[in-house]
Length: 425
Image 1 (cartoon, rainbow, N blue to C red):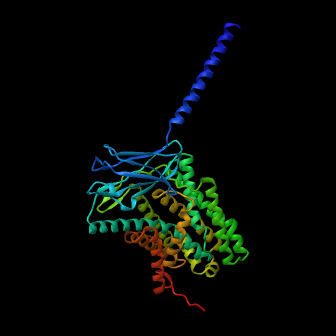
Image 2: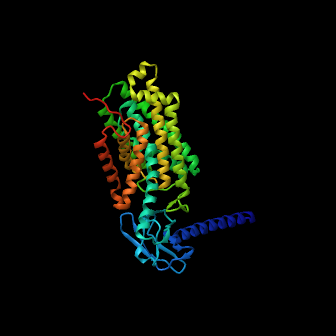
């Protein structure tokens, strides 16, 4: 063997040993990586000691517990990645200290394999019963307006679609979910910033909604398919969209990459995160823009004309099919915006739109079938009632009270708040 050959063999052996060492080092590092959830409890900048934290799986099975140390820190090791429920034991808090938001006693935290999660509990002074009730009412009212604005944005499209076609679209809620998950794909999977991911998702959702009308609903209308049959088809379409999302993304809740954790800003008794302020501001601007479009533009006037009397609008020279297509495109864009805003404030999961669908129907019916302004007003009322009722009753019943108010108002005004009386028979 020549010197060159010996040098080559020696170099190859060194490269193999280096690669083996790298693999062993990576394996050791991987073996040492432990999933955990941790946090730090502070009050007015000082650590809070001796507070118990309990961690369980999303099914309620206990995983572990920890007590905050002298620095206020705590941590619980996890068996693997997944979604966990982190609960602070309020009774172990020192005298005079309580949660700023009593409803955030339990947090839902998702931890990836080999990663860590952080649970943040905001602590504040314990208030008197009257002051605490007033503070919770103020906070719940603002939360109701925020939630109602999101419902209103998604319900406008549902109302316009019913007004122009007579179709009760049960797939509308799953279009909300679709817009949120398209944003999640661009934001988390592909790494785009949330703003750019949201803009792409709005465009794609609007295009998808238009394609559904062009490829499915228009041919059914041309064949004079009955509304009951089309309603059943919309339910089937909802199942297809929902379970396609479930197949590709799974059933766990997922946050967007940006704005997941922010420091809240106090406005008197109300506390809002900056992203919530932006969501409410943009929601108001979008709703005002839609209202101006419906009243000031030719397309908006045509939409209202078709919703009022389709045959008369067509005899007046309005392209009814083009107007209906525009309604579907607008509705698809608004559902995407609503899904994105809801995902930013809470998180994204495949049932988010389905849970919102009943409230959308309630807002549309309460405001008056087929009227966009009625959908806005009714949705705001539904959102506020559902959130304010949680101050006095269990939060699990908040949707029940919203629907109860819907029943009471319809008993007095069957046509809805902004609906018109119609002669039957």
